[in-house]
Image (cartoon, rainbow, N blue to C red):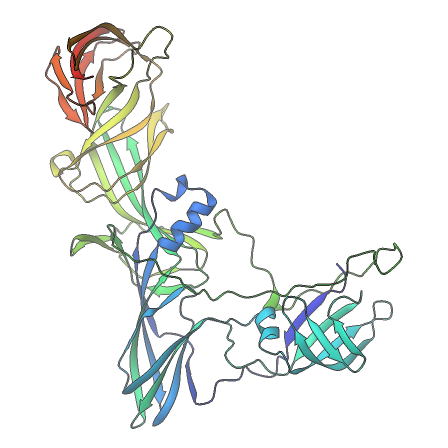
Length: 522
């Protein structure tokens, strides 16, 4: 790269505070509440969908800060707030005076913003001779940047980083309004000097959560253990340390807002094209010096922008309660939700939950099911009832559920499914895969017009169980055709997910044929 470009501020000079500004560097205490956003478990989303889901996730932050406020008008600056704060949601309680105005300052100290805020100012240009290593300094005025830095020196106007040598800029001060962290400020009139304890509350995006479940089926094939985890995903650049944490299950009505994020800006070199001014010779340059600490690149990130996954080792469970029409989960102890981190905390641990294993076949009343059609597959479904009598009776927020069976004394992955919100008292199905030993062959054996506007169809469904144990098959037929009616059936049907459902027991290595007669409008 031609002309390594390095920018830094003189370490001995502190960042200048605004006139009459009182800074609160960080909160004394912080508590957070997470609200879900987006559709579907994070595992099922593409990278851009995951980023969009993070933007829909919401966190409510409550900070306690102690500051001394002299008498008079002051700007009180809260440093270190979330980098995706929603400014209009912020409130401050405990101010000992009259609130005049409020600002969200999201211009972060970075090479780009440093140049941008210093245009027209005098800086030093430090050049290093790449052959001798000798350093020289020259005063210059910043004329343009950060998209191509242009300087005016005693020798004329030049573009920084385009000379082929190593160059750097040195700034004596940091411009007012730049901070290494986002800040929220408020102007207040204080009558008398006060040591105030303030409560700052606000909403921010970039933090989300979901439920993740693991079901372990017992060897008896009739019960399972169900473990649930609250998965907290912090895709923002802000850490919430040692914070009492809650998560709210349910879909809130929200209005989309345009959030200004506190993002660092880079600078770009706009130089002449390579090989156009040196008669075909490519410039060769020494390796640039290592960047100082303030400019080091972040650690490599995992897919989705997260750096670390943390699972809490203790099995204390989150406590569930109601908040209006939503479910509130309170973590048993404060946790640190670090920037770019995923953390999991257990909230459910139910033993010996009863379930029924079914082999579900979906039929389509539109299809003729001739010999050329591929037969429908039988889906393996675990049917549970969310009742205390069956070992559950807990609100189950939506998320992803992984199922494990036992094979040779070891757990074996048996399938995974996205799970909806399941209230107490409601049954739910978990479709975990397709059965290899259960075969299905439906046939349309007769069709006639009952009237000019009515059609009657006769179906026969051959069910074959090649397993060495009996099974229960459930045959479903969609009822969404106009005027749909079951005319004849071998046993009474019920409704399951908007379809008529018939259940039949198949013996080991056995078969049965189900004959169904239906009518609907033509």
